[in-house]
Length: 431
Image (cartoon, rainbow, N blue to C red; front, side, top):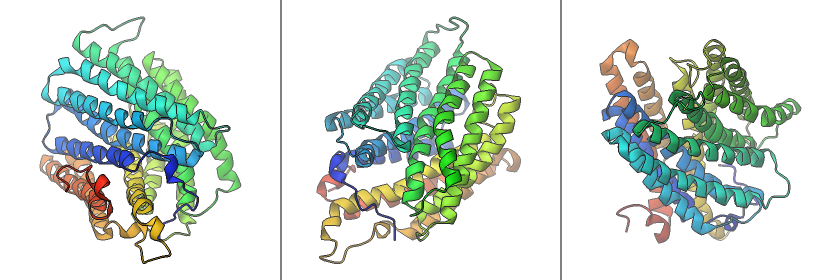
């Protein structure tokens, strides 16, 4: 049985179709991104296309949907505008699809327009959630993280169109700042700012909620310190890379890496003490804890020696470990959020009057186990392609794509089988 918060007021958030629309669009970006890993073009433009499909498309669009739904619920305030919540998805979807296509097809001249369109969507999201959070009298730990994350979203999407413009017409260096400085700062603010600040803020709530445990005294002291130090570390790392200042980037990077080690240890301890039966969400959170600690340790060493060159930590394993942290947090959370939203809408009113399924009954646990094995096995083979050979890398990409397709299908079928007509209508071809 999953932990279900007893005091959730879903009416404070947008209609269920809004967050589910974000999640389904995010899954489409995920499938497209993994497909380009297997068959997409090589080189820097292809890499940029894949990164934007997976990070901005899957992860950030999913974050937008989750925050739009649950910030009003957690904070006990009404969402500022449901209409803006719909507009943000449309703008971001069109912008990111165009931006990724521009990179993947080589039509770079389209990147500034598409990038600006995506930025307008993210700015709409930031405004809507910022206005929503302004109604909170006193922020808790999660709300402080989310408020800081919104600032990072604003900063990273301001730099994005500038990068696209510089690629097409070129205007750097300016005042000692060149293209690679802006790129390094943009990537830092995106991954360690917008995405991981949101992830850490969500885990501070979810790690206790979904394990039905409470933080201990030492964990609470770490949480208070991390809330202050982590944003400072991200700012120093981003600014150091923007200005090519090694020691500033090094200091910020060490704070970021050690903070995420601590987050991983806290999460591992909560999972050790959990009172809830194991499920796909907690299994993936266990992987997140291990990946966070492993990434933080390797990143500490890499950033001490090369804070400007090692963008995501240790060059050989940093990106893989970081993808594990972000990817499995998002995947694990979706395994609860999507069925939970459907359950609240379709079954909560029937509880006590007739037999109803539990949240974990809405998806197929066997498929979840197979897709996890496929993602781990395929991802491992693809990551080791330089050591094992190109053939193993291609096979790994195919297995990874199969796992991702199973993950997306497992969640989409929750909507098809259990959602009402208005929700199923989000899926193309649904009757």
